[in-house]
Length: 266
Image (tube, rainbow, N blue to C red; front, side):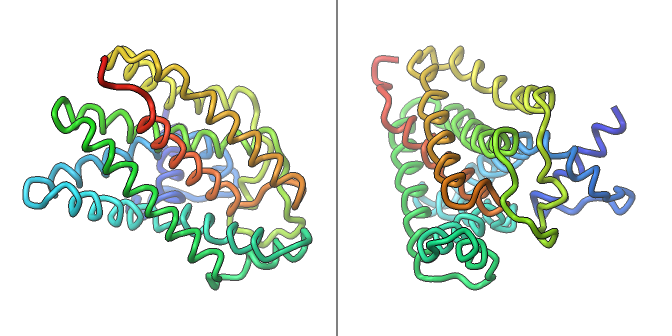
């Protein structure tokens, strides 16, 4: 139990900007093993987002509260996934060989493709969540937002985690910030990580009685397979930026899913 708590805190330290006690010792092995708690980080970010929206909504309109929520959510994670998404947009948008794509993604500067991608990303997030708020504001708004945020933040991270199980690390150099965790995961580790997604998934189906929710894994699986094959074709695997991009795309897809399924009859 003590070891698992240590790994959880290492994950918090790596994937968020939340201060962690100085007694937490960091090793590459601990960082690698802590990846099973990547989906659990989604509970933290989603819970934080719901809290921020609730407090903001006491004073401001839904639109302003949502903007505040999205901005503070980015600050909580240090924009680690958004940064990866922008790098992938630049790399795959401007590179035509594996070497060039990896070189561009390693560049800390954001290019035109990255800027356009981020604008589209944030526009979609705001628009979709705003539509969900409008759908549920007459009935159990915070209950629905809680479960949708939890699923969006946990399932998107779990999807990125599964890419580490099914694909190989693309870079041959040991200078990446995630190189230490870029090792094949075991089936046991993936199964353990899935618990953080399965629990809210089942609870939301039970709470909402909307059986359409059961279809959610299908589009997410298709997205993971499609993006995974795309990465494999161009760079022979994944990088940390690729994981971040997959997380962001999957999160958007989850909002799209919930915004598109019928709710009025439930």
